[in-house]
Length: 167
Length: 164
Image (cartoon, each protein chain N blue to C red):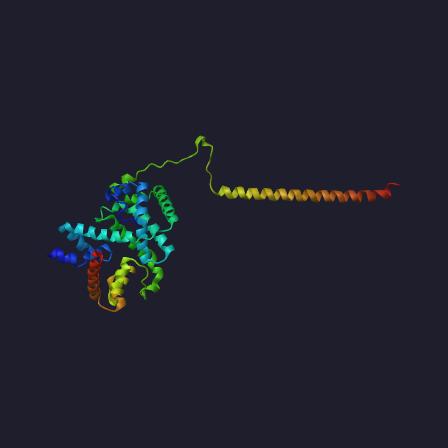
């Protein structure tokens, strides 16, 4: 996608979205829809389900946009990204329970590339936390280690991710 | 420096990815008040994520857009109809949702709106009328046949009586 081709005035866009402007809504979908769709596919690798989730995501974005400013988010995309993952996890992942056992990494997006750079133990922890949305305590139970160990591993993973993102 | 150490711990990335626990998020919000420069740091990480996500975007099917917008229109109609807006009526922004909905009707009141059950009723009436018509034709033909039979019968019975 032409990432720098269209510069969107975020402040103005949010104003228009709050006002319920159909043009602004369409612009938001055209610009961010594909990016959010790829984020959904990372968590729910099923096109049909991902489409339904994207629908839910945009319905939520348009109806909850007025909460965006109050919630103290830094950028619109950050807010949409977290909302998308949250909805994708709650709507789509419970149907693929079996995949929690085996770490399946396919596709070629940066998060998966990052996961592949991690050593085996961290790979599993990050996979379960991010792609499966499990809390650290649950991951600790599953892997049979102390929650503090998981928290420590996650911290190292996030530091690694910080470096990964900067490069 | 404490702030540097805090940023280096990857807490921002954890928050941006949605992996931070409630306690960590609260701590981050507290730190943001203490050090407003954290905001630009968070925004920078989110922008980086945005750039990668836009670069790795996957185009959803064309018809999905229509489906989404249809659903939104439908939902908003519903929202006003059911009085569900009480949910958010305490927020100031609600006021900007105050759009006037105009029911577009053809001019001159030439059209009426009826309950959908009338459709079934009319279909039933139509079928019954066809059945009646068919049976009317059937019985007419039967009657005609009967009539002919009778005509054939009557002369024969009359023949022996006539010469007498």
